Length: 217
Image (cartoon, rainbow, N blue to C red):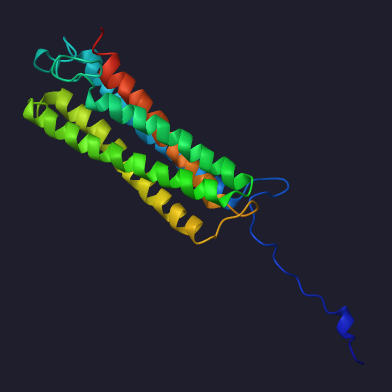
């Protein structure tokens, strides 16, 4: 008995793409699950901060009440933290423009906007480092009581996440310049943008909590 070669079938796995019928890709699902864990992580940090703040007789302590500026002052017409916030929010917009570009098959828009996003994220980190130096000079330090500890813990962990985001975006930029993304294949771009938007939202909450709420105009 002989078997006909036509009876033999070969199954090929479908090429990895962005759109899948009946669900999302593993890359994006993995990022969403990771973001969920990060939400719980930062929720714990914020809970600790508000617990310390609620039990303190005066918040912020008198020694630090006028050290965190986000509105113009005579010493700082344009506070560094305000500039950093504007740049980070802008970087979230440019990142999304890059995503929309590759969704339409426009690789040039992806490269251009992700490149700007990497630049803005890097400047944010440099401004944060500069702000840390200025605050240390003003006496706001990691060992300066609960206020200094909570401030640098919250902003430091966020800064580490921004650094991780800049690295991820740099990889996306490199692959985009190599032509590895297309309209059908750009899961990494989508996943990285989700992470970057999350980092942006966390900073807005941090900025409001540390600079606006404890320092009424």
